[in-house]
Every structure is written in structure tokens, then in C-alpha cells.
Amino acid sequence: MFDRSFAQWFLTRVAPFKDVPSEKLAADRDAMRRQQEFNQNYHDFLNRAVLPAVGALVKILDHNGIVHRVSTWGNQLSLRVHLAWRWGELVILQSHEDCVTFDHHIITEGEKRGEDSTQDHSHIYDLRDPLPPSVATQELQFFLGRLAQDLIESEPDPELPPGEEPPP
Image (cartoon, rainbow, N blue to C red; front, side, top):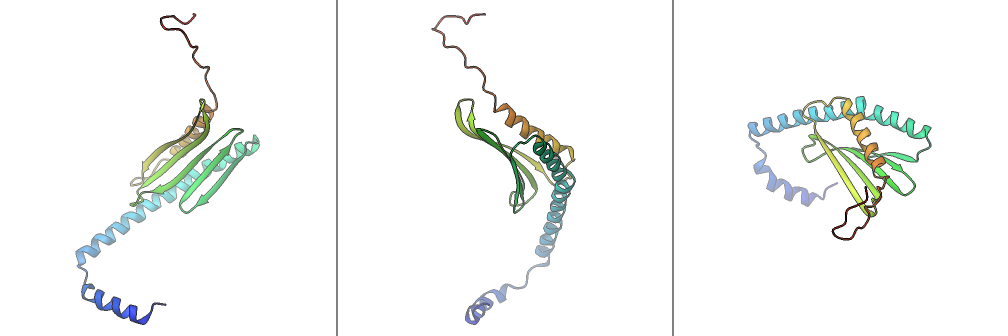
């Protein structure tokens, strides 16, 4: 509990400002109502699209013996796929201070075409309107596609002396 002397000190300074104009309270109530709408859009998108799509992907990964981990922390869902010499992670969250956006990051790390790198592919969707369920599947396929593309290294171009043409 608060110290009595601190509470008295606080109340003597705050009490003169306790009469909040009604228009300020109305704006605050309106902002909270809109926030709930955005939160509901995110909740619906997670439960109707993201979680079923991730569940289907986990079944495919399990069936094929691919090492992976799904975890949650706060308002984010993370799917990490581990391969022999690299990993990829998909992070889905409701972000920004206004919590109006659904943010999706794909993070891959390891030897990327001969160099150590971490790449973050970020896709942001506005939650003012409900998102269609197809977005979840599309983003999971994009994640898997990026992970698969980064595994293949193309043949290096041959070094040629200046002025010479490569053989046909």
C-alpha cells in the first residue's frame, strides 16, 4: 500500500485538476471503443486464420520430420524452423503504439549465398478493417518460400580477364 504521507502529497497536487472537460472524456471513450474494434479484428484474424494455418503447417512439418518450434510471448506468435545450417523464424504480432497494425516478420539467419547475414522481411497490415483469412496462408507460404530460396546457392560467375567473353 502507498505511504500515507505520499498519498496526501499526491492528492493535494492532483485534486485541483480533477474536473476533466466532458469533451476530453468523450474523445477518450471514442478512442477506447475504436481500439476494441481493432483488437477484435486482430483476435478474429488470429483465431479464424493464423492459428488454423499454423496448425496445418505444424502437421506438415511433423509428418516430414522437420525440426520446428511454435511459441507465444505476450501478443506475439513465433514459428521457428531449424535446418542443418540455418534457421528461419516467422513472428506474428499486433504492434505499434496504436495497436492498429498486424505485423509479420520473417527472420532468417545463416550463410546466405556465401555471407553471414540476418534478413528481416516485414509485412504490415492495417487492422482498421478485418483481414481476409487468405492473408495468413499467403504469408506462411511466403515465409517457407524465402526459407527454401535462401538454402540454394547459385554457381559463382567465372572470373574472366578484362575484355574476354564468357564461353557460350
